[in-house]
Image (cartoon, rainbow, N blue to C red; front, side, top):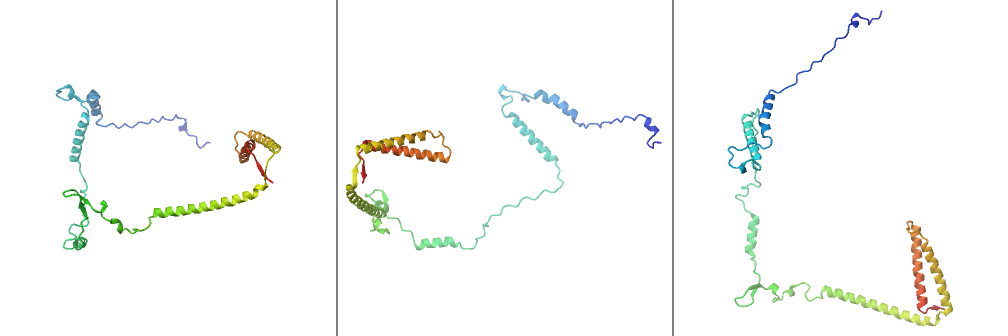
Length: 268
């Protein structure tokens, strides 16, 4: 026989019903609802009117509600302070701040700083500044900045050459040395040019024409290579080649201009 068989298993199971606990309802619920219905709903927008109303301008002025809230809050605070009970004792008050140094610190002592200052003033009284009067009964003015007193003789650099003149003399000396060197260089070049005049001869018309044709051919070839380069040169090789071709075109154009407009001499 099956040990789990039981006659009670043939009976239908009883349905379990869970009973909810009662929801907590405040004892003031009815009073709050009545207050909300009676008072707040009737004055939700306009508020309470003043009684008696003297003029229409006295009805709900600006910030009138703020003054009412302030009175209500102060009244509630006073009521709360009256019924509030403290189980512990009140804390002692904070001690008063102590002045430092105390006012009675130097009583019966000598202030040596002030006494020394007074003593030095007594020993060396301050001389008054020199002044003068321009005309009898006129204004009094300072003598030193007026220019009537030879104050400059007391300067440390009195009788010496000013610094700006010394700098100017040094610049003139350097300029003279540079001029002398340039003159010597021009003299040596002119002497060398006179010696080399015998070795120089002018180009003939046939030589000048042949040289012009060769330069123009090279110029066209350089321009063709320059135009065949890409529009945007991004690599270093293309940039270097473009710069070299531009320099070549510029040099060939200058040489052609010189041959066409000037006489050219060559050294034998």
